[in-house]
Length: 174
Image (cartoon, rainbow, N blue to C red; front, side):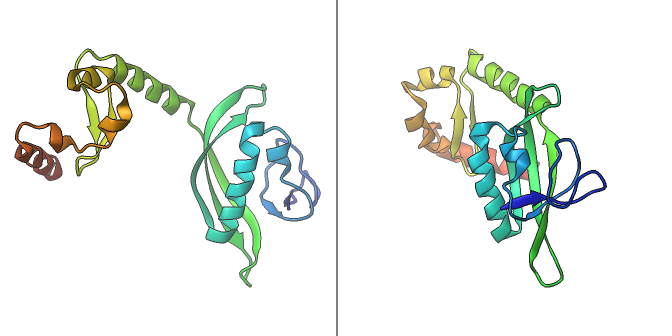
């Protein structure tokens, strides 16, 4: 269980929305998660991630939909680290959140442009694994859905697979 750490605005066992502080082990569930800062559907995953952070010491980069003061939700990125006392016992989480609304809007515009381009486009890893393909490429290559295409290597679509290796070398040099 978790409780909000004390500050000059909140007692050691209470959480007041809008106040700063860290979560630390205690008798109560994390009020910010159950109290409406995160969307209700994210609460189980958030609790799971907190437990994982207790074990691993860091959360990695996580995405949630959080609540603004005006009541609207926004996409946020969260990174958390476990803080331990001198004996190695967990005492708090230190977390940083970042509003990623602009990034999500840019990604949506990119995806719309990618999907609506009249020419075949695809995205690969450096070693040639296909990550994404637009509808024009799927039609050009005769694929009705994307999954079988994503199982292929980009080199398999080159007339001369060696040409893909030359391209990979050129990208690696840059």
